[in-house]
Length: 105
Image 1 (cartoon, rainbow, N blue to C red):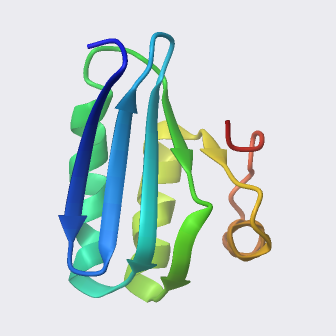
Image 2 (image 1 turned 135 degrees about the vertical axis):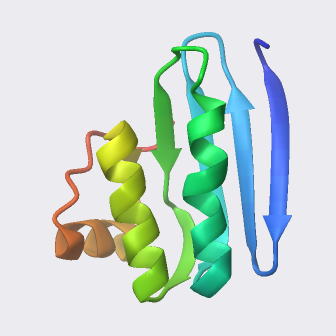
């Protein structure tokens, strides 16, 4: 599915999944809170089922509650490739002990 795109919008969270030639890029945007946050880890594992590495770009996240933090930690444990350049996302990852392996592409 090289170059294809899928967008999932749940409440105030939109997640774009890009199927690139060498990886799958997941870009959540908006508020990662409550039940919206719980939907993100459920959608992402299916994205990488073909064996391609999954990159999660957090620059679009504007707000996170405890459910959002837990969702990010589950994604980190499952995929371990987080990218961000925004000060908010970097501070969030630092606080949660999530190592950011690079900046978003």
